[in-house]
Image (cartoon, rainbow, N blue to C red):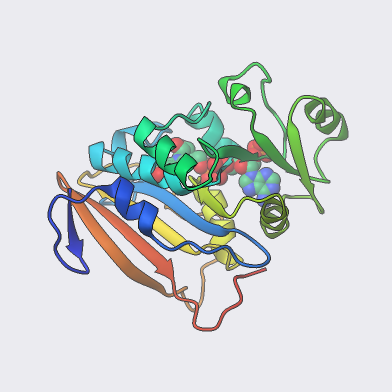
Length: 252
Ligand SMILES: NC(=O)c1ccc[n+]([C@@H]2O[C@H](COP(=O)([O-])OP(=O)(O)OC[C@H]3O[C@@H](n4cnc5c(N)ncnc54)[C@H](OP(=O)(O)O)[C@@H]3O)[C@@H](O)[C@H]2O)c1
């Protein structure tokens, strides 16, 4: 894998590069990085899953980013579609984390309004935090509360700013969201996204899957991003963008 921007560096190790990036939590919330893969024509899923869009380079960055996260945040749609389970990382990454005082692997958190889960699913062997809203069905809430770590935000739907503030107070300083597009849309709309790592796979996928951000009104004006780094591996582009803050306050 080579770095081609901001300057050429041959044969880079994403595990080292992503671990050395600065990610400083805000006083009121964690640093939030989103990681997504898309085809050249902007598809984020084929047959309802993203696995056929990414190659070895994407997998290496996916793992490197998990390596720097305290918590992985996903929407229930993604957890269901991608059959989320316990987080496993290569031993080199685990060792690096432990040396830096981090837990061996990041915790997993799932956002859900319906709380429509099969408690026997693989997801629950990962001991996830479930983030829901006061508006969720009370019986389901009580049922889940007994078996998982439940975070409840005020209102009908999950308030992601409230959830992130709670996570920060609990010591999660770097949150990696792996989507889906609905979660990314809400985070960006509220100024809660600091970094976007986007893999563009050399594929045309067609279809009508969602873009990497979905479910929100157009941002007018659009949110400016700064291209920080581009790696290339077997035709895959691995881009890192940072949100340009220019005096902003980290969103609410
Ligand atoms: N290409 C990529 O990198 C990538 C990454 C991730 C996902 N994907 C693809 O994207 C698709 C899934 O994405 P998606 O956008 O449809 O789903 P999603 O954002 O992962 O999950 C949507 C679900 O999350 C819950 N949710 C989200 N925001 C909420 C809020 N504010 N309050 C309460 N609940 C909330 C709801 O769960 P309940 O239904 O439980 O209420 C909602 O149905 C899949 O096809 C997946 O393969 C692609």
